[in-house]
Length: 431
Ligand SMILES: Cc1ncc(COP(=O)(O)O)c(C=O)c1O
Image (cartoon, rainbow, N blue to C red; front, side, top):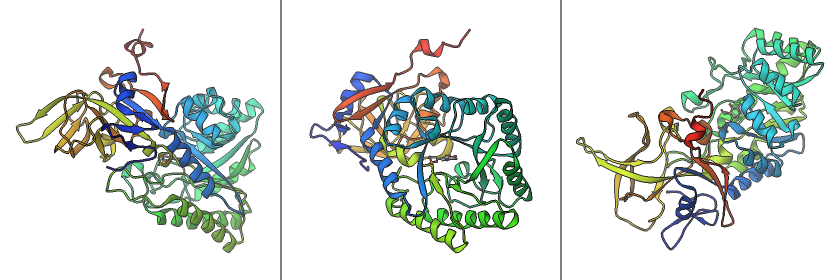
């Protein structure tokens, strides 16, 4: 079991995060509960901001809000001088409602609706990342009608094999995202944007996948995209001013994951971009990255209450908790691995191998398979680590199970930032 950020083992046997005993936190806010170590989020933001810099071009670190977004998270990011990327009207609305500066918002999406594009223009979103030809035409029309201009990046697919789970690879040749740099039509699309009255093409966006643990995947993508920038410049004179390299930096979930050291990687990344550019006689004004998971995954822990237990005829020992795939669908989606502990009896060494399952009516509702853990008692607090990214944001109400609340922990204080849902909330749109 790996401890992150401010986590400590208290002598009382209770896990501490942000100076708070998690058992006390569950007494106050109930379970299941998402808790966040906000100091660790700040530290991660500053690790990115201090290392992703260059003497030759401006840089911007854009938090990929799909990983975890609430108004409180937007406020924390604004304090850290981060930018935000959003992929839907809902994410955009959340950021704008928190007062996050619109010019620091990047709007993504492979199928943005007309309403979402209009919203982005109306709110004065800083940059729209256009994904395909249909969208380019629609956005141009909207800008024409609203008498506005939009700053855009074109999402291109560099065809890089990122060695990650198939569902989170985004740049293979059949990906639904962006337009391939290998398609002849892409050149024509770039020409169309450059010649359009209302769109100001600043450059390109790529994102090669998520939970990437090999630095070389990024270095390979830089070579490919710089070659592409050069090719387009040679063919019809358009030279990109901005380049967004996306996110996807891998994190530790279990012993199977060895993330690369971020600081050194970011320095190498900016150096390599500069070298590749110089070699091709190109220059670039601004380079961006979009980390999501690597900012929040290890800052988040989900706290559950141990309920019933069961030994099966087949020999499996189950621990059932009061949440499951509704608050963490990643095991079912990607076969993700997690570490966990009985957080109120840390020094009890009487252990056994258990499978931790949720309360949903699905056999696939498993959180962790075959983990060696303290023999639990009903009512114990089970902490599952590394659940800060794509858990709250992917949570559902399957089986009409209520979504947990979110509590930020820092300096011995627990601050509720999202209330636990109530049964009344569940019915709010039922007619
Ligand atoms: C366009 C884009 N940028 C950034 C990210 C963030 O990826 P991660 O959370 O793995 O850093 C994603 C995730 O899918 C993405 O699609």
